[in-house]
Image (cartoon, rainbow, N blue to C red; front, side):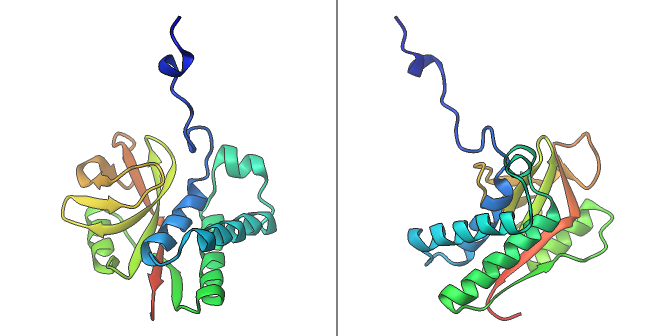
Length: 182
């Protein structure tokens, strides 16, 4: 008899839930503050969970449907406040505001702001709706620090609104998170 464990693959965290909105905030913080250890990361995760409750987001909305940009922004603000209180560090978040109409313009604008002390939380749609963290950009790729194991977005596979490309990036769904002064 063949073991079920050999035939069936177990579900992984994220296979059935839509918690990438929470994890993108955790990963932005983790990238910018590598000194934040496990115990403090758990405390931050609890703060973010409490923030979801404060925003009256139901478990069904969070786990089943995903999180929209206003809630992600609220989570980022909660994380910034938590880090200021717990680590006494300077951290800030801003909405990405350039008026972007073409993917080339988005690529240039992101290239101007991403560096070792600033990342971008990006909302993706297309192949699947997903929140991710961008930390580096080249002419052809965006490097990701991602909860779904995505490592890179290829420019040729991205657009702003073309549904024929695997990934659509909405410039209005980008939040910049910065470690240190503005």
